[in-house]
Image 1 (cartoon, rainbow, N blue to C red):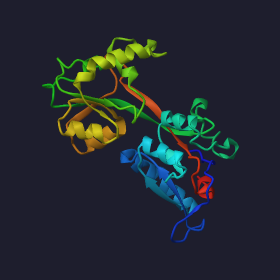
Image 2 (image 1 turned 90 degrees about the horizontal axis):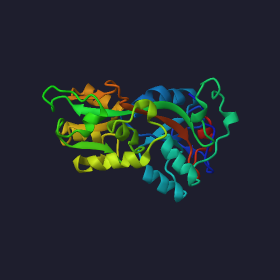
Image 3 (image 1 turned 135 degrees about the horizontal axis):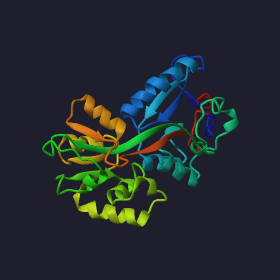
Image 4 (image 1 turned 120 degrees about the vertical axis):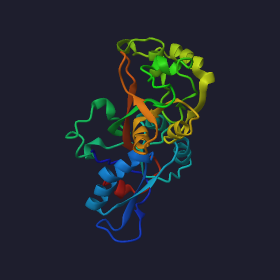
Amino acid sequence: MPSLSACGTGTSRAASGGGKRGGKSVVVRDSGGPFGEALQKAVYTPFTQETGISVQVVNLQGTQMLAQIKQGRPQFDLINNSMKELVKYANQDGLEKLDLDRIKSLKSAKIPDNQITEHAVAHSFYGQCMAYRTDAFGGRKPESWADFWDTKAFKGSRSMCNPDADLPELEFALLADGVPMDKLYPLDVDRAFKVLTRLRSDIKKFWDSGPLPGVLLSRQEVTMSTIWHGRLADLTKQNAPVAAKLNGAGSWSCRTSSAPWCAPTAGSSCSATRAW
């Protein structure tokens, strides 16, 4: 993965203990859960082994991070979040600009050009999909987003994403309303919100954190929910009666987004962050 070369304006943190880089540490914000565990194994541990710089992890919501950045006291040096969130921070002068020439592995990583900005570099994609309780519909399975909207045939409450957690799920609404997959973009935003409004009374809760869809499904508070696919995989490992609908019936059922790295303004750990 690429090395991030941007950093804040403060001095490097000093952690207790030894290390090849003088016991420095870097604080990374990620979303936790299975994705955070994967980052620990694939990124954080190898980084510490290579540099001697320890990685501390915090899990903060987007609004919390932006508030800390605006106050000039972010409790993190690097951010792992959706590109949508990082565009919002950049528009409010909340991110350091990257010196892309100093990112040695940028070209060899073959990252798509549209996933590299002056403030952030994407490193992975994640999927957002439909999840449902397998014991809720008498053996029937939802086959499309139209079924997600059909609360008469597939009874029970629903849960969908709060914009504080991710992009509004406009694609799912348009697919439910019969828009062909190859005609989806550019999005008809007005039509999508009208379709979302039709389902509003059946929404038990708009989820604003990764674990919440799984909690609602496990407690049988809802029979279907949108969910980040990694969180669903964690549920199935626990033998919860849930499954995902990823494709089929002529309907695209999973939305992908990118997860980039970036650094907040007024952060610390300048030298440690450069090593990233």
